[in-house]
Length: 340
View: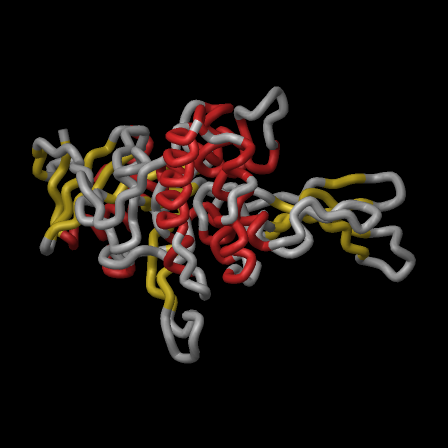
């Protein structure tokens, strides 16, 4: 069962909800685009429905809200370590189905990838509730249907934006507020996109061979990729970080340890002591990312890591298309299998 609310009534709901939660959604950030005097759609805190950008895909994913780009893990002195406090007010985040699937895969990495649970991720993640925004049209670069991420059902609430009103389905009673009493009850179940403009065919993981890793296709990306890392930082499922010890005193006896986002395309990501690097060439980094997203993660967790949001295609300054890379790889694997 759902609730039908006018935009005015929904703003009243948000106002009441904000007494308990900080509320985040995709918004237009004026003057923050990649060119001068241009805007970008990213995640920010909202108070009203009118602030939510419904018609455009966000340039960045919502992960930065609960997995900060830079986070101090602890401060240290001679003989003392202190974990910093953080904002503990619970969060409500409006997300599309693909991103909700992406969050589940981040949870897998940080919470279910072995015996150790990531303390810093968990303490923020436990505070988050998700409102899934119905998405039936998608955008030009989306391929969520091919990746099976067009539908999500583990939301705390779902919403459909209509002309002058919204339909709301609340699953978690924690998101109920007093002023919803007396509103119109309706039958509402969110719908999902059934077909994207872009389609990908994923290679059978059992047919990917060593020869696939050594194929000439990866050399193309050595000449095109500039290792800016935008595809990593915009991706909802990229989770890698690096560590930094920062001195806060002249005698280096007081400092802090941070973790900071990084990614497989970023220079220095695979560098080791002694100057050795696993993946010097940018094509090798593209190969690593591709295989991690559509091959290795599947072998370990029985689902592909990529959710097909298409943000990596949107943000690449060299117009490298990940969806086309997947399709090229599929053709290579099919051809190699036919020649066996």
